[in-house]
Image 1 (cartoon, one colour):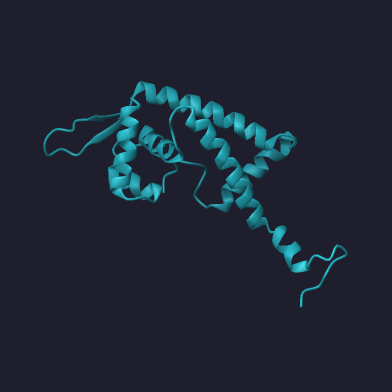
Image 2: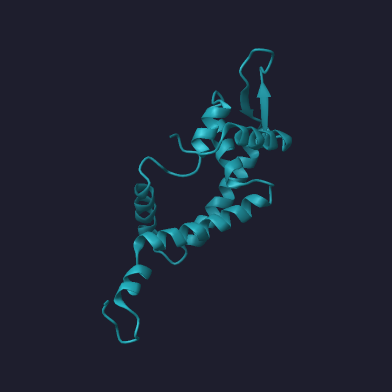
Length: 157
């Protein structure tokens, strides 16, 4: 039987609620909601942002490449890219008969990414509010280390 503290709550429950892993999950969900709300103003989702970010650096990526990076099926990624094309932020270039589609981010897409970057910076500031400046880089480094090889959405994997 687990030990009981002064409030009658089991020590096991206290250990679980103080779990770093669970705190990270909660923080991630809160951050995700903020990001999704910010993206929704432009009709985007995190999947759209990931694909757009990847394509801004690597227009040679195929639908299958993008799908693997997002952890979705190729048909699902086709739908995502089609939505980005409908928004005018991605264009298919050299998509003639027998040619592999080359997807490029349009100037409007680059502007959109710059605007999203500004909003993400604002969200970062909200999340780090109250944390001394000298500790902010340590927090970012720790979080980047939690997922080795990752610095954010649209990373090369």
